[in-house]
Image (cartoon, rainbow, N blue to C red):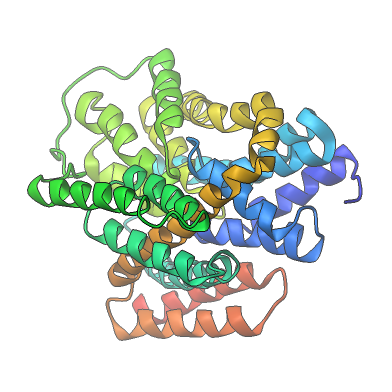
Length: 389
């Protein structure tokens, strides 16, 4: 791996930030394509294990991978610059959209049509990314079985911590040819499934009208972000219930509809999905509130790698741990595939959106240019204006 200057390293990951459409799956696939497949910073096997480690740590995996690769290239300062470069475009875009939302709203037909077209293209990006990641991670029939089983468990409501932990332990026992022991984590997942079918999950459906409380303090906004950043095990999507509770159910500084609008805006930006925290912070405390909550939620994602990099490297090099991490990676592929099915079901609701989705998928598979993602998103937005306005 060639050494890069700090400025070049920052610009490389800033470019990743501008092209980070499609959520964590597409972002991870993009990072892997350039740094692993094309430039060989690490081997495919090591990348899968690094990704598996970050799957069991709190925080957005794509952002943590950027911090990891920056630290690998130029030490801890390089890791900080890489992480900052990756998150900066999304933060600026979301900050501007938050200001626009508060000042003018997003109810115009033009914006709604543009939004609908982009959503269909984002679905195509995620589907392609699932295929690219799964192609390298599912290298034998056991891993395929683990991916299918974990995806099914996700669809049936089993918590991801149960299924991912079981995926790693099952593959570890299978590689050691201790087939009988592999039955025990399977039984635990079945027990978790039985429990989930008997209980009702907590949903985002809070009351539309929040409690009439005063605006949160700046320290409360920072604390809310930090707490959510430390609890997002399994990826950025798990931050939703924590911030929703603080901002809507308890804090009452925004309505549930506004909260869902922020999530939707995040879904069409080139950014880590967790960047919708900027919107939540802006609604609670204006520009400074947006900065504080964003800082709090990204702080653990920086700290785990910048402080614990050496420990992460030692963990990855433990050969006895490789099978566990490979199993977790397969489980993650299954989880992502299950989430993708849900997203596509909600996005492809009529013929024009399906047409935009199919056209986007065709372009993404046939055109390998690095700017293809940006072109697809912009083109889908233009088609949205034609079909939906």
